[in-house]
Length: 195
Figure 1 (cartoon, rainbow, N blue to C red):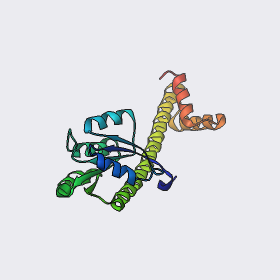
Figure 2: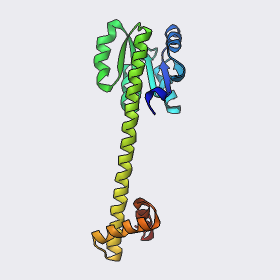
Figure 3: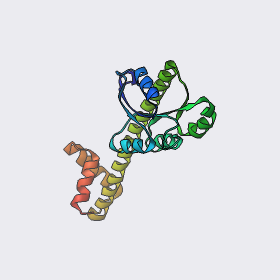
Figure 4: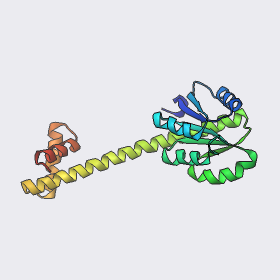
């Protein structure tokens, strides 16, 4: 599924009503939704504990904090796509603080074209992160299978006095004969011998 087919959930952290309504009106609903608006850092953190979002937009300054720390934390800890909107006089300073963490900085007032291009860039980045997360999960699964198979081999070596090659062939044969994954065979061997 490509980025054109996805719908991205958005958390808008902003206390400025005029900014909120113009931003919401600028985002196509068939691509971005739902859009949840919260007015401060504390509320945003609570919202993110209850629900996950693809993109977080932060309109600085916020009533309870400027918003830079929130942007960095969300990008780093949760891997979210984050845009931070700052006044032009603060752009360079904020950009320097957040860019190494993957946070996009947009100077305000931002026209609709800049906003949409920034959102598209963030969506493309989000898709790349999703692919990397899937790949990482696949690698971790494979590593877990290898650990279980190795553990089962040692159980067979200890209990049935097989050598490593024989134990390996035994596990592969059992998996093939029963049409089950080697991981499952390894788990059954470990369970059978109680180790």
